[in-house]
Image (cartoon, rainbow, N blue to C red; front, top):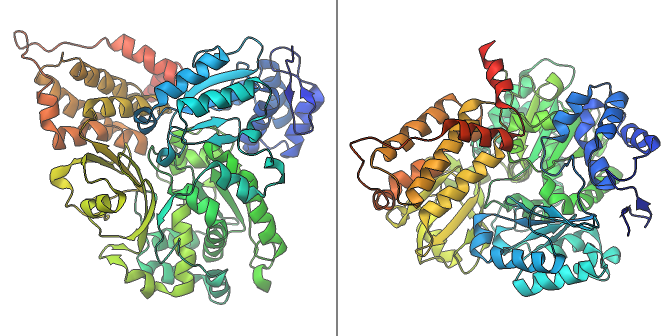
Length: 626
């Protein structure tokens, strides 16, 4: 029986928990990252990849090499879902458990893997060969059901293709050969596109149409930082990740800070279920992204940049590293970019490790610093004191790409597209019950109904705009426009037909938020558990009319008292469906008994939250009382 994991050279590495990990190997990994505690996530990811888990003795050694305590190392190792303190299989199969995947046949796909591998979801085979897991959205909702098999992505799975893949793996085939027997000879870009279809359905004028090479960067190198910021401000560009803050103002605030260092970070952690637009830009427009980051660096005086790439997009890492290396060779990164004095800038990739909360910029910065991905208290804001305490600009992939095009074509060109207050184009990630799921680049201002006609979703009964943290609307609202001032969205558009159960969808989204809460603050950690339990009462037909008021009151409390954006938006699936689908709730209620509403078991709810947050809640409750 082979208890080792084969590394890239075909040599069996010791399995975590069976054979001690050599001290020299841990030292080598730590030294690769300068034994820098701020690179803790990189260190732990490499240990996980090599040895399939992070054992207690390994954490002790890492702590010694990085000058931390064992508790600090374990705090990081236990936070991220792609890191494990217990041994995983040599091949870990993560089946995407998003609501869209469920409606596309996930249950039958799961059964096929379970039957062939002889294990259930959540188990590892006795020989250490396979682990089978469910995982939240991996950014493939346009080609669901999907799965990650180690670093390989399989899409559009059927029970037949799942069974075939499982049998091949069990027979000894490596995951890469599920994509192509010639996988090793393919370019990094070819590997990515063999695994995942871009599904670009409509290419707009700004991002997905023809884009000249480095035109924006050449312009930026010839003008002052102040002129760059003014151009971005005048264009009307707003952050494309959902919040919509004016990009030029953010850059101006960062540039105004007096500091020996500043940083530019790209948030490529698009973990919102139903969102996959950045995946396409990372695949097809990586040069445009890095160009935009470099322009931002010139604007704010940054010399270092970080691309925070979600762990689910690990299949794109080699492709992006190759692009970065090419840009260094061409003088587009490094010292004196394009021959311009005092224009030095470079970018490194920071891999995430499976944590939705890291899409929030404070949590993302914490993760880059080698900490658990927990949000930071504001103020100060990142532009004042961000990564390692220095001024930091954080924008998402789409925003940086837009910035590069604005410097090329001019502020007026961009400003004239879209509508007042919502300028330029927007990438919409469309999935669910429609004929043509995929990416649509459109000017702001289209109505939901117009978009549904384009995607073949005319029989929609409900549309989730902006993912779970956004708004679910009914047919009587399809006339509304996709703009910042009407229906704002980071990009996700999820279509549901009339056969879908609204309360089932809300229940799923609440389970997602309960699972992804970082656990830091009580309102989010416990309140969302209560919300989900209340929704489950409605689904069972056990709710009273008073429970509707309870849902509204509890949602308001969570929104008002949560520390970060996750808690502030997590009740949205409940609130938007209460508003737009009131009959769904009223149809599932029954009269109260003597006017008394059933109560919830608070201790049971807290215990569930403790397990999900992987922490004892009393630790945080104690912190709040000091």
